[in-house]
Image (cartoon, rainbow, N blue to C red; front, side, top):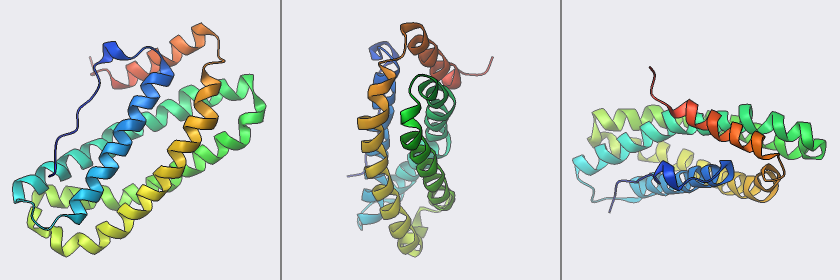
Length: 176
């Protein structure tokens, strides 16, 4: 019912757009896991703990790296080559802020479930509202980025696309 979500091997990533699309697929998968967590009435304590651990880790650690990819590596480069993207990029930033607010409520709830999986029933209504809002925001947000912003990345010079990918990889590299 609740299951572990995997990653694509790094050697399958060809460029920044593929890396971003892989992140978007993980966002969709983890959002679906959050939805399953609040919908289940038969999960064991172990399953609740595992799902909550995955959600807390992904949305608390990995998603902020993805946001940094878009805000620090993608946004300034696209604005430099195509000022007509300013409105789409501003909407992206605003949506990131909305998502961050929602996750500011959800991540602590998932952390609580990691420690106390039996609290799912008590926290279910709080989780339901915020998870539904998160699902709705992500639905529009991801579709907009994929249709309006990601195609513009392919118009960047090859050295800029390579630099973006290197920056993305550096954000995820273990500390030395």
